[in-house]
View 1 (cartoon, rainbow, N blue to C red):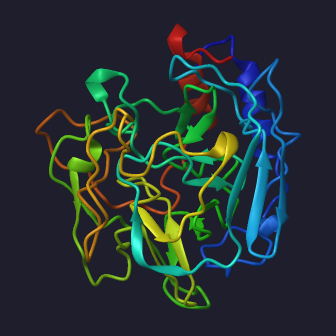
View 2 (view 1 turned 90 degrees about the vertical axis):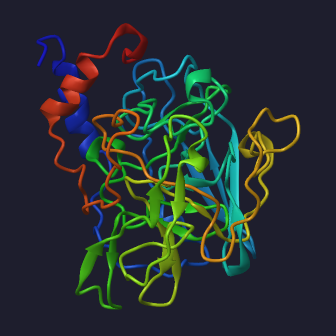
Length: 350
């Protein structure tokens, strides 16, 4: 470890205790009418760094909707993974307070924009990246190593957003039973799921997508969904009906990471949270053609990336779709400080 980074060790230690301890549980929870209790107050966290605004968010509810207002600022040190800077946003994210499973899932193929919000008040996008850089156009940003340690980066509007959810301490999502909510209202759980109502038995949930191509470009053409009766394999939307009968997504470290489609009816966002591109790719969006709505038994081809160490060479072995519960929790302070302290200049901590 470099000698000039004791400040970062302090930041990590402070960051891990910035949130009041919560009971970690894989047990599903029925969505309360106003789930404000699940959202975190991170105003006293280390934040993005010196000179950056601290995270700020509020949760309110109407008769039918949950309304989250957020400045979308991160609660951990900012690492510049794209040419875009990080700046506060004025966002309002809405989702149903009583979500219902739709007759037909809604496609997220090539969707670029808001698909959900974390309990830390940050935007969640589906896995597709944009048209730039050309060598990885519409590819998998996790596979292409374009994401920071927490699974996100900044977009053209200087907005931070996640493509993958990492449940490690520095990212302030480790001690949360619910990681966030999709814009269709269903909760997002971590990779561990309950196998019975009392949650006496748990297991790692796995994506049902298999790799059939190279996800560097046009990631949705690189995977397809394979249905299975296994209770630990997720459906085409990367979720499942929980033992108590409620529905929820699971964040995994294999494609599609968070969303394969929307199981319920997504709420149309407005203002800063409005998706910049239409789902499936609209005319003039510069996106590749849409794959259409998910067919019965699963959506159009999608998939799952390799471990954090980087993608296998083209034509190499298929990455595993099995994710152990809290498989990234073993990252030590030495690892994280080494990661931040040895980044090249383009990735310097701001």
